[in-house]
Length: 286
Image 1 (tube, rainbow, N blue to C red):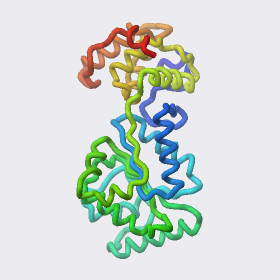
Image 2: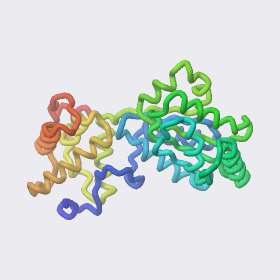
Image 3: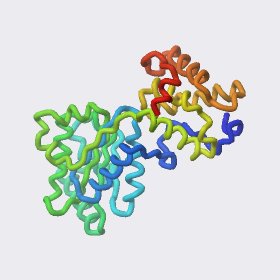
Image 4: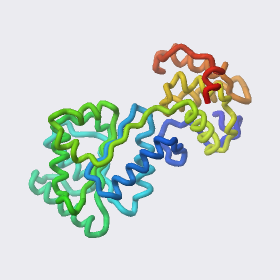
């Protein structure tokens, strides 16, 4: 709708995770380095946590793009209700024939697949998304599956990606053995104000627009209202561009962003936060 008006090649603040828009803040860059190291060093389990919309999925996609020739990937976006079905779902994630097989034959099929991949110079990486929904029993089943690694040859690695609740589960006394097998863990925090300004300008530049389309004060308001969560920043900035286009406003200032924030909150969908702070005070801290 507004792309032509603002001279953009594409939408700069789409909510779908697009690796071409990846902005590596210091912490996101460190998290990506840690995950790469975990995969390349043969860590049995890696854990990446963060709030909803913090950029976890985008980092994992970037990780997979950088190691695609080294690994075979199995992805679990949806989890079985019963831990007894986990083995079947893992086989399905790796494309292993699983229909009509009992647990013993399923396990052997998985082991055979893992050993074939290893012999071909690839490790298998199982990525479990929304892993905060895994209970203690399910996590224990994953630990037992990792026993196929004999300590010298790592043929199955698992990356757990989830919200902060996952950390609380992993700290349970019942999961002491599991916790000791986690080689890499990293928690993504919200962006600070400096990174939020750089993040917004980065996405505008990638989309072919003017990096200064949003004033620093407008971005400061979006940062304050969103708490620094990238997905919420995207929501506010995208809506601000729609409002700006409707009013034929050439740039996005703090007054327009304030209007967006108030109306999004009034609608009852956007998370209610602290009262809007003076934009100049926020931007001055950059």
